[in-house]
Figure 1 (cartoon, rainbow, N blue to C red):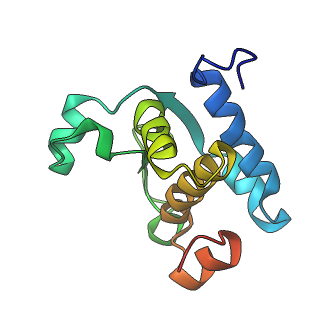
Figure 2 (figure 1 turned 120 degrees about the vertical axis):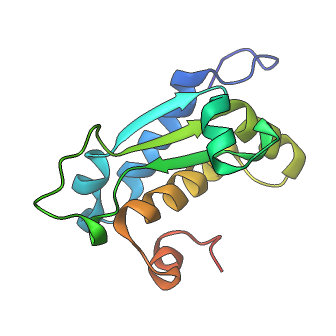
Figure 3 (figure 1 turned 180 degrees about the horizontal axis):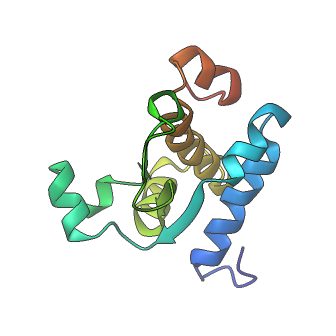
Length: 134
């Protein structure tokens, strides 16, 4: 985090929180999670928002962009690596609005939710990793 109390975390600081979430995963998931590219931007692009039918850019905190492992085939020719996108400004807004959770926990929760799409996890699988999931 920034040393200054009045400065919100920048993109590299949010990325560091997500990377710490990878390190906190059970060993069985760490290597595969590390293969998914991690990107932090202030907001999703207008093209992404439009494609998802989202009008408010503050309502999208994260996005998985890729083919879930449960759907991949050796015949797939991906045009880009699987990626998890975290959107800093909506994350910070949610953190402030909640007021009852650390930024570290919120970033980890959003990251794990997006990672669940990559792994094709069930709700029970997610709940075993993320205590927020119910």
